[in-house]
Structures are given as structure tokens and as C-alpha cells.
Length: 67
Image 1 (cartoon, rainbow, N blue to C red):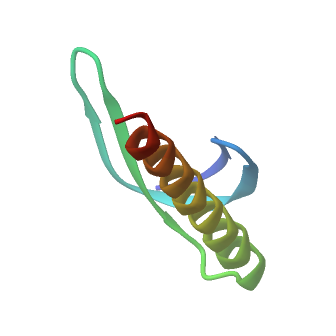
Image 2 (image 1 turned 30 degrees about the horizontal axis):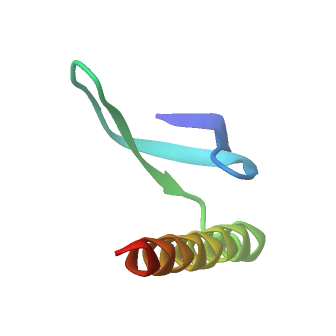
């Protein structure tokens, strides 16, 4: 099944994706998508992961300073 999806986390990816798995729990919803192999999409996802990693590092440093 092919769908058009807007992935809204801290950015929007508007591209075709294949749904691999859907699971829904009481307080959690998880969707696994397989995106088309596109250089632009790969760059957007890489930038998001890199910025998220930096945000986590800053958060852990702040917590370590508070201890």
C-alpha cells in the first residue's frame, strides 16, 4: 500500500511511503514507514536525526550540571 504522508515532528516530509507496521497501545502509537529512496528526503531525515542528537546531548549536559 502506497500513501502520501506528512511526517510532522520538527519538520514536514511530504513524500510517498510504504506502511510496514502499525501498532497501537493504550498510551502509544507506532508507525513504521519505508520512504522512497530520494536524496532530498534522505537529507531531511539525516538533518533531523543530527539535530535531535544534539538536543539530547544538551539536555543530558544540563542534567549532569544539576547533580
